[in-house]
Length: 142
Image (tube, rainbow, N blue to C red):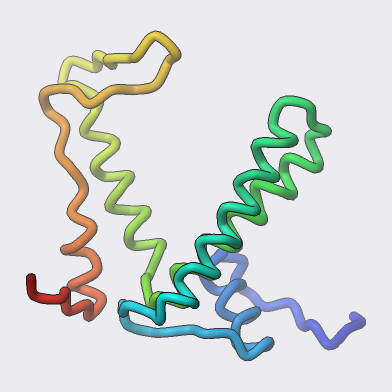
């Protein structure tokens, strides 16, 4: 293998991005925390750039370019979470738990005209703050 990169056993986005941040001396926190406004703005700009690239190729393709840009969005999103000390896998699991409550006990799904799945009467909002608190986040007092 060239370039000094050694393949790790894990292929989880969180682990891969953590390896990248460590290798390049980028911010990586282990506990959820606010970051300096300049850093937060920079991360937001990086995400916006990647999302714009997805939008640009999503209709016209080619498919390999779309796949690349989607992966870049995920990579930068995981990096942004790492900069803020957020375990994004745990947050995604909570969002998934909440999303699955959109399915009614009768198996019925409410959809918008464009096909988006809507929240039914059994919907339970995600408790992202609870997930972050379990990760060590201490929210600021109002």
